[in-house]
Image (cartoon, rainbow, N blue to C red; front, side, top):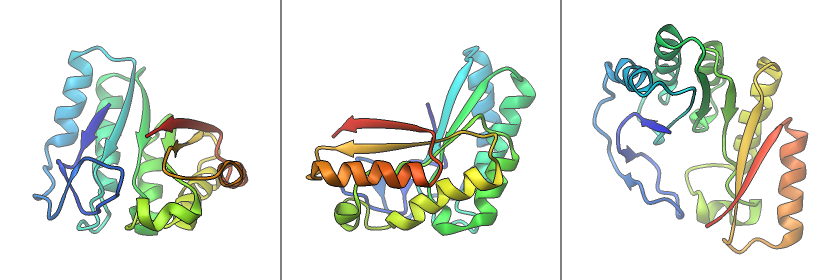
Length: 179
């Protein structure tokens, strides 16, 4: 797993241990450096994720697309999963990432609607589902994936309802982890 776009997130999720605040400018050479590391390690499967970058016009979509393109150019057979932010709901940013050709698009729902504001104050439950649904609709050949955390206080029926929502959004892969 490679985390791009720096080490400072523009959001402050309650479950996350990443520094939040005002990030440094995005490094234009980062996509090439990440691809070089993937090539040097001869990796066959990678996950590319990032901090939230609400300060950037495309919320970092260009860096995701560039990293996918550079990796494909150097290691055509490498499978690439991207774990993307919600891009503040920007369909254009999501399409930019999908047009770069990831093998899997992952956007984590994280928790149930009742706990969303506490756990993920910068995000919205409906927007997370929308990312997955838009991805499925725009690029149906790219499987969608999401993750749900347990241990934050959700009731069993809330977890079941969230899984049903993910299925309705066309999510094909779900991971469940404990915080």
